[in-house]
Image (cartoon, rainbow, N blue to C red; front, side, top):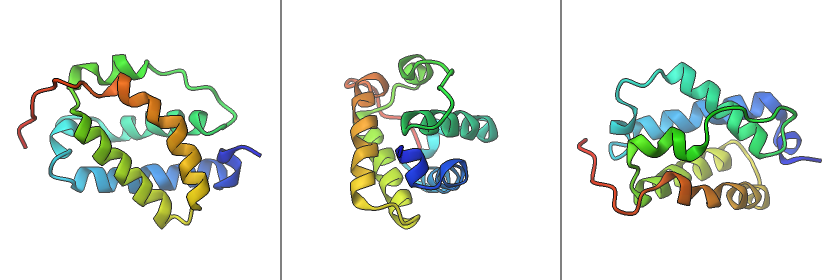
Length: 124
């Protein structure tokens, strides 16, 4: 059984993405990354990406992580904050620690594609 099915499928992914972005947008260090962003569209992309990454039935057909995030010059510490919000979201939704670890193992390699080691600080 895939992680996607273990956590409750599409409905669980939708709930997780909604809660995740509520947390991220409330984080003053991360808010500047989302200025002017169409959140409805972004959430749709995120649902698609997360579902595919954890074994959902549909492939992710969006841009590469490097292409999508490159212009944002995301600092490694900010990537880590986002991961922390994801872990908190999944924990609060009742996902067990082992499954969260499996999800983290699948997403951790993306740090090299998303974060830029010498990214300038974003003004908040």
